[in-house]
Image (tube, rainbow, N blue to C red; front, side):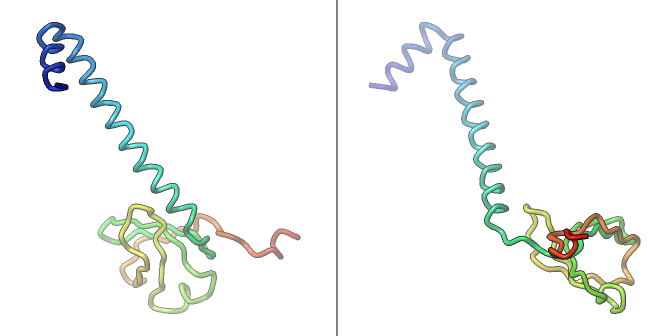
Length: 120
């Protein structure tokens, strides 16, 4: 029955049917995109707050990654350090970075500073 109504509408008003079909397709596409963004926002809201230094590291092969490193002397004194990437779409949870492969290292900020820093 519905198929018959759709075919009759297509034959009697083809332009109107095409415009409605395109609008329906665009509406579905927008909803899919919005729901995808909503999932990322919910994932970030439920993720634990990472403490440490927010850094951007660049490698000799021009790759670049941002993440959180512990606010300790390990990334200065050791041959490498652990970095927790902050990319919500990435599949890496923890990366070990060898300092010999680094081209550049920038501290972008301090994440979740201790309460004693707020008193100063």
